[in-house]
Image (cartoon, rainbow, N blue to C red; front, side):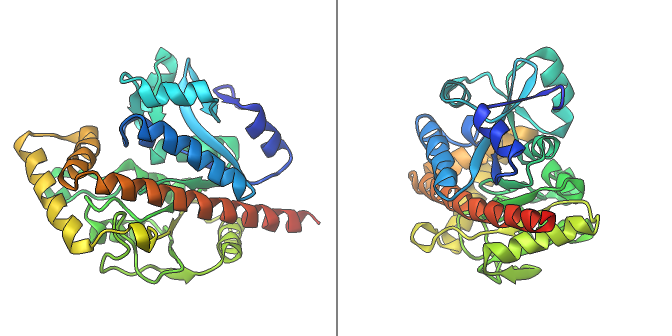
Length: 309
């Protein structure tokens, strides 16, 4: 056991027995959604994972420890405490040593999951290259983490507030495979389409499990992006959401919003401009990603078990 990690009994037993476990982030709870939708979503996502044969491990930082799995009271704290810090790779040493409370981003959750031996992680959308990054150099640490941390990330693509084309180019440069789960087009978070393709299409969880196992058997360190489009019933039209995003980006520029504050600001602005529709879509895609991630975790655990026989 790592000195900075603590586990719930449910997660600890699952890991000891080699059962499938799915990591979940806390930034989406603390900074991605308003209360009470955030806590309701968090609990429902955990249950979806259990219903599909895996164990959820929601990850956050409290009292100088990285908690692999949270109880109901801790989930509530992440959902309601406005002082929770947003934690990426660079923030770990300070947040842990100071005893502050921290919600893990995609990059930070990947790091914690890797330390705990969890290989599957479900999120909403990954970070990426921001629009205008050719002058701002605003590129998410999620991408560099994917380049060398062995975790499969199930997502609805990158957040559509980003520059999707440049994000995919960056992932290609870093050797990160981008899989389309039952799709040949890379989804754009709120929408099922983006105008960009994926590296490989896979239609079954077992196929994804084999790819993950093969990659890491070959010592090809780094993650895989498994892009899973939002269900059609909850998807938004690409052109419609794009016009809303442009309006939100202009607002952020006028208010000089920068750095780690950009994404929460834009998501909140988009929610207001779409009269709450974007939040409904966000919740639906997170639930769908959790379901698919659990099935992939079960398949991957099966691959590992076969190796031991």
